Image 1 (cartoon, protein in one colour):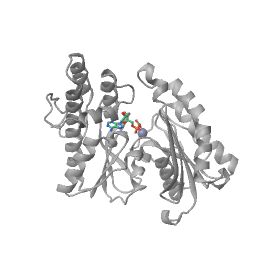
Image 2 (cartoon, protein in one colour):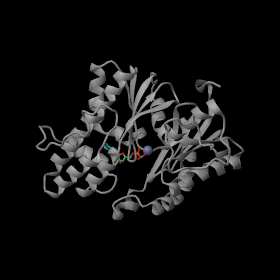
Image 3 (cartoon, rainbow, N blue to C red):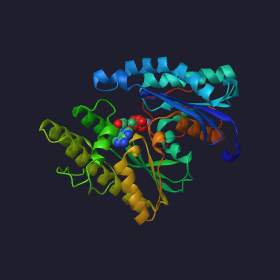
Image 4 (tube, rainbow, N blue to C red):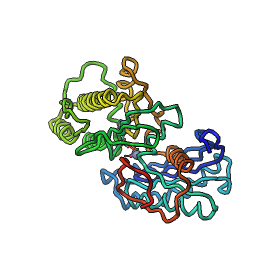
Length: 342
Ligand code: KG4
Ligand code: ZN
């Protein structure tokens, strides 16, 4: 069946890290209800996500959330035609909560189940809202990944480069924490950085800007920013300098990858795709350059059940359902990914 002909309901379940999110999707792109419960409060006193607490947090949140999304979508569990849940990569204890819930609901309802790759789901957030032109270059930036892929066609991901150390989101979170902005501080660092209207008084060298490959490195930048925090530089200047360096290197390498591959479009995905500096810089470049930009709306950038539902539906229509023996994995590269049936 063609995607556009599918009129059924998919339940998307996401629990790979510290957000529990469920979505009822009608057809290929109509979001009937999308809800997310953040665990930021649970982890605040520890300064980062504690895996054991995250898994327990999902367990507590997920059943009330299921009731809410069904109620607000005005559908019964028996109306759901397909169950899709994130199978990896992520924290294994967290993954297992949503993954097993998806399998159990599918078994109870005698409906198909699909295991979803979290990173593919991030790219699929784009397909919910717009037509993406292929071939494309995909920049995936989140709390755990900073990678460039060549998307020859939908569902085919070739790794062009990745961070050799920290992920961009991780750097934002650690610098934000040092500045006293709490956990998952990326959005706050972004907000402070964007509040500077004049030239920023501090400057960090964008890492690996002139290397010939498509790899990144962000740990040196993180160290420089953390040192500036301890040296007493002002918060606004640190956030602004960090954002400028990150945006410059991500933009330059992604455009170089697009030129080399002659891709028709650039697709942004992952939590850091919500960053205002990054969105503005890519939007400006696409107006001047020869590529179409695809970027999800803000609520679909960070982890959510809607992207999981869409990714699950695409795989189901192309490859059929997954067995209930399918496992979840904490590590699972997207490059050369076919499915979770090992
Ligand atoms: O994709 P995501 O929800 O979870 C992972 O798969 O990792 O990404 C979360 C990451 C966090 O590090 C968060 O601080 C960062 O995305 N993030 C941002 C912004 N919004 C979320 N980083 C910078 N600027 C933002 N506006
Ligand atoms: Zn994610």
